[in-house]
Length: 380
Ligand SMILES: Nc1ncnc2c1ncn2[C@@H]1O[C@H](COP(=O)(O)OP(=O)(O)OP(=O)(O)O)[C@@H](O)[C@H]1O
Ligand SMILES: [Mg+2]
Image 1 (tube, protein in one colour):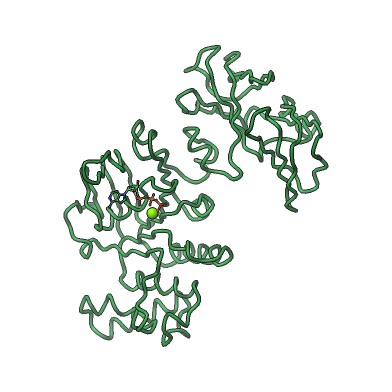
Image 2 (cartoon, helix red, strand yellow):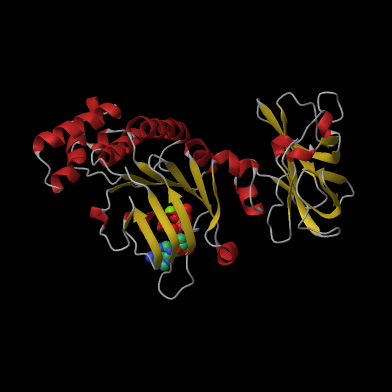
């Protein structure tokens, strides 16, 4: 087991602008940390720096309290599982599992015992004498994980390990990885994915990275926190839009008033909506963006059941997607973009209806012109 810390870490390739900027991060023993972000934001680069497969341009990396910047990968006690499992095709599962340990000149009985243990945990026992081509994608992935487990690493590193699997197998293997990590390991883990649902499901801690202009302005890290922290308290419009599916609706407006109960935003469409956020940093008249998640609209606004949702936004229904458990109601915004409300599966709304959706003040987010969220007011 080993904790990981990164301090003021930068990475540039050649003379180009840094792809990783000012990363400060602490990952504790047995913590499962997920690097999440859009393609090209630097997730793999950051992971490969921890593994030692990529040099660190500046800053410090520690594993288990020791500086690792110049320590070769083989001496970092990390085991990496890649997207393409890279199993040796001419070797059996058993030989694949043994390979790293043989290279490290471990004694035969130790190797046999480690393989037996890993095979038991991963339910690979019946497959030990097969070659990779006789395995399913999910089984191959388990062998790849097994190769990491037998080495008893202090740190597990996963780079999009499920992206070659079909949807059902992804979910199954994802559950498996979470179970394995909880049950058998004091090791810390870093898991890279661009899939926010995978990140929400697996992570103790999500590190959300952004790219381009945001990275230049704020550094590589957009926000670090537990999954629900990022969901409920996104620090910026980028985080708010990245976490959650369908994504948060953003509606332009301006501050109409600020008081102890929050901020009233006057939307360009005319409605005034109160948001339970701290308006200390914005003045009346300032341009802001109101954010509301599709699942937080209330369809029967004004009813006794929804007393806190009496303020409403009224729009025409452009399209309804009925998915069974719920329906996505697309609303006309008067622009090219749409607003989506997630309503119950039996919602009666139809294309062309004008509907009033309740907007609870506590479910509203407000972003300033820099894209930063105004702090949520404490309830009660
Ligand atoms: N060897 C290299 N030389 C120059 N630029 C590189 C090199 N490797 C990566 N980059 C650049 O660094 C940035 C980050 O790449 P990285 O592979 O870490 O992204 P990622 O977040 O893992 O993306 P994806 O989700 O597509 O895998 C990209 O803009 C990429 O083009
Ligand atoms: Mg990558």
